[in-house]
Image (cartoon, rainbow, N blue to C red; front, side):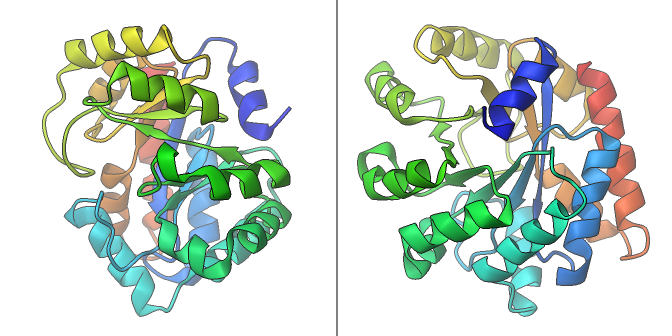
Length: 262
């Protein structure tokens, strides 16, 4: 059983909290400490962003995080090194890399999958790799025993959901609104209706992200979803903090979110 599957099995019906931060933000040396801070607060799975120069699905908050990390020359190899360092003292919490296809393609899918597995990565979500073009990457990830996490949008038709259901591993990430990360106002009832429809086609847990900014929204989303994904709000916390206070502030915010979805 993969770490992701075990995580959801161990939750036994309670909801998972999946926080996102960008590797290398605000500095490379702080990332592993922040990952441990997320776990201290109650994170069940960590989504770790791979910095990219053209993060097309991300709003200004996460764009700035990528810019800060790229100023420190943080690339995919550095991100894998951070995961390996995290694994030296945490062998349980699943880590999913979230990013874009170009860095994986540049490294080579087979080499990437092997290095990611060796570092302790559990899953990969590539925002700009649709299922129609995912065969080569997924073959490499499957061979390495890594889960491929796919996005589903509010506009995804049932025929495409059916294709994603055949390919997805670990969990699926439902984008709760149209737009980029951190944008918009959530219609909780609409999200609940969409999740109910998706459950008719998807055997995997469904995580919901985009637009979840506080404990109240996280609690409302958790009534329909299997997992709540929070990114921009946490990255804002990092942006506003000092390097000395960032971990403590993240831990506190994650604890609030986790308490809300229990």
